[in-house]
Length: 297
Image (tube, rainbow, N blue to C red; front, side):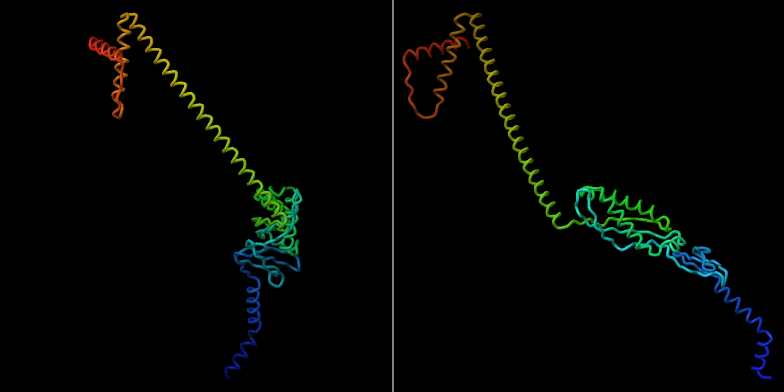
């Protein structure tokens, strides 16, 4: 008996076992599902939702259950959306927005909405138009964070039934038409000119105030100096008067003689070679003055 006959006889006797083994292998291959960390599998049984498989090894009933949808649970970013909106002061603006989201309940996303991205874009456009319609142009530019929060909170509430979580919303840019830009530029230039004029006027006013303060200070100092000089002269007069009262006519003559000598010294100390002619009686007076001074010393 050759080898071929032996194999035919073995297969004929164990055909059922072989078929059973193949069936078991197929069942294992079909019933075991390994789900990646970044995905979830939606399982249907007879066309109806049966379960959702999470990451790792999962088992399903072969030939009864099937993986109908493989859904990525990674965060997604929608393409940048541009929509027109009109502010409360009737200015047309173009707003560029971007939304980030992720699917947390795939069974809702699969069976409740057909095109998730398009639905989110439409919802965001409506929210942005509604919010900007309540604001003036200056508020749109300055309250961008408030607008972003409004878009995120309202969008999150509306897409909750779709099993979606909105992770972030961004207002990328707010653009104006050319006519509005030109008008704003003229207004900005006018405001700059006004501020420059106000600053110059304030500077001139301050300069006048400082000059007035300086003139007042100079006048006060001059008056103070005159007052001090007058007080000094009054004091000198009082001293002379007291000396005359105490010493009589001799003290007055001494003061006169002292002044005469001082005058003569000033004449002698002058520059040049001028000749000074003094009357004879003046010379006698100077002589008497010198005698009196010597007598005092």
